[in-house]
Length: 283
Length: 337
Image (cartoon, rainbow over all chains, first blue to last red; front, top):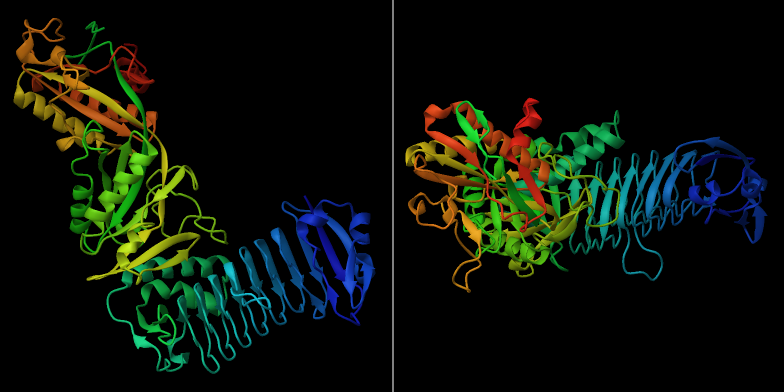
């Protein structure tokens, strides 16, 4: 299998759309063909080599390694169905949107709409992420529906809006309306949240990794009574495993690996909708 | 068929074989707040499951599990269930888990054979803390059948699910908190009907030998002995003089019929015969259990009152799995029978 290293030639004057530039697609091409691959830059099409210097290298699974300031590069990893994408630098909007499998790891920050309608795979952002992470494409009813998103830094507004399945872990603070209209899935927050977290939460779990940072639950949430320790052990052990595998050495990993030994306080809501959602505050 | 050339520790081992047949099998793990409640659930769920002739399935407790061997860190038991078809197994599993595990205080139930991911996602791996010591087939092996999939409806709309590590778990509100059930477990091909016949001087000697053998065989993974205490005294032959019956007493091994039955495998020294039936996930596991069982009784010697070891077969007509007793013993000892 071939890997490709793509180094940005110069700062992009316009937005560049990298839909279709995927590890599997490039692995099937020789270097010259990969360099000719057309990509949308503003209103025109350019060969990939006009924007990036391409080098190939041997690696076990199809891999793309981007280097440079990709803050104006959108749709990176769009529809990814296998292989790995590494980015050294910031990236633009729609990172990993609609991806189904594989891994994207960004050693930098991402723009808005990262992981939108993602259905599988892993998306790791070592910096901050913008608004609408794991939410929906315009007109769609369901957001993220599988996979794992790890954001080491902060995230913007509407994190996990209409998310249906999968897990989102954010180490830092998040903006307004976090986990709003959550259908299902798990949202783990390591920092503080803006206004109206859990607004219209139908089902799913919001875990406040640092309960002291959790806001007062809204009036439409009620205390969850009864013994749910068995579920918590299943859930917390899996999260601890995620912490060990993906976040080793990070403060977030310590929070996750400590979860099985903690006992969560539980709130149920949002009663304004189904009320089958839960907030878990492990003490 | 029963030449008595091999005598070990004074006990004769017949030159015969046990005959077994293919079954569909699954394993489930039941945990509870205290091990005795897992035991209660296990005993109840595997009750009335001695023979597929009239029970629908054959089942037993494979072994007890420590907290470090279960998905939720609580003590538990692993159960093996065997049936003649995947459809019948699914029916029996749902009934037994629904009536005997769901109802038992504090229990939760998980797949003991990994059915593979319930949904696509990052979690193409067993859940964290999945039982490591069960010797289970690889992830995703076998067809998935419902475990909590239909039982969830007991929640009357209050049930919720959570996908953890790619596996879906159902949370059903019950009066002690929540009943947690993994959505599916996997059906694999199993082997049913492995057996040993222990021919002894009298009832005490036969019971002692059978108990010793069963105790040793229970330490073998992937097998259960589904009859009461692991032992059956009503060994059967295929067919009957009564057309409605598919099985009837094994007259060739009934001491009271020596001299009466057309053909007897016994002589005047044999006063009591016990059978141990073994169902396993693999033929190798069944063979290993038979080997361990034979060694357990041979080690006790002929002074224990056990005189012969034999096995039930139907001339190779019943099933494709044959377990020759002497070959099982020689495989371990390097001796020839």
